[in-house]
Length: 164
Image 1: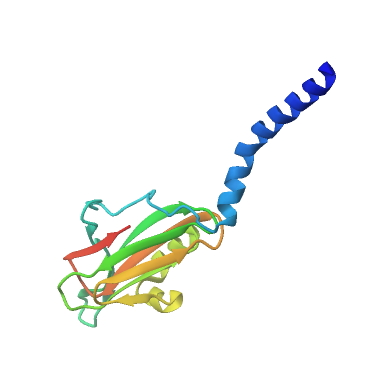
Image 2 (image 1 turned 90 degrees about the vertical axis):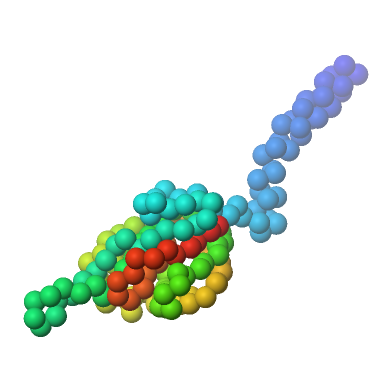
């Protein structure tokens, strides 16, 4: 009789110990992954509360008379994500009337290629246009480091807004 009580007690303790291990699995089954809310790099001067930042990066080209012109202004955010994790955000361009674009690179080495391509890069990565208030909704295809790039054609020094 003592042996039967001991066996039942061990089973109850074992069940109680295993319940916390199943909770993360049940969370994945429900399909609700944690949203991405922090970045490993943000633009200089990025304001978390308003979401404002400026496009401080530039690609240029030379004209025939030796002058250099800006063909693109850009800025970027980097973040880590697990497969299925989502990035949700609100986008708002500045008041310049220019079209703005964004794309998400699936690896940091792709950002190095973007930096080398310069003004021809937007055609390579198929950017998304936003010329008024818009939303960004993206899900990570796999675990990794990602780069969210914002840009517009030509020189632009005004604010752009991105909030998560």
